[in-house]
Amino acid sequence: MTQFALAFFGLTAMWLAMGRDPRGRRWAPIVGLCGQPFWIWFAYTVEAWGLMLLAFAYTVVYIRGAWLQRCAR
Image 1 (cartoon, rainbow, N blue to C red):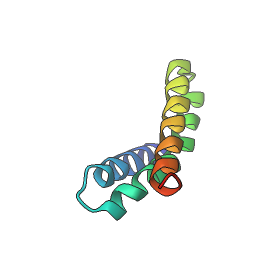
Image 2 (cartoon, helix red, strand yellow; image 1 turned 90 degrees about the vertical axis):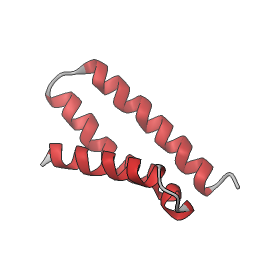
Image 3 (cartoon, rainbow, N blue to C red; image 1 turned 180 degrees about the horizontal axis):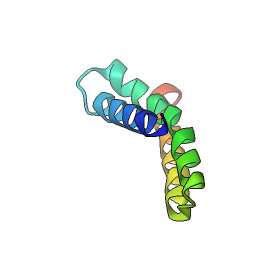
Image 4 (cartoon, helix red, strand yellow; image 1 turned 60 degrees about the horizontal axis):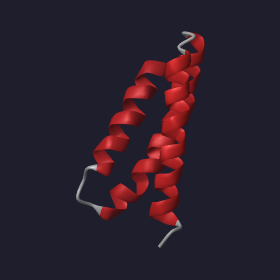
């Protein structure tokens, strides 16, 4: 289940971010954020601390993207 969620949220966020529709690009960081708990859980369960750090870094990037897409207009 976790691996499915990782693939689903990650690929969907990328698809939206790279699309032509501005509404889709606006939702891309939100979809990406939805996948972050799965990345953090996965990194914790396999004790991949470098991956955990990367997951937190991606979380910050997604939060910034959501802020820019939704609030900083």
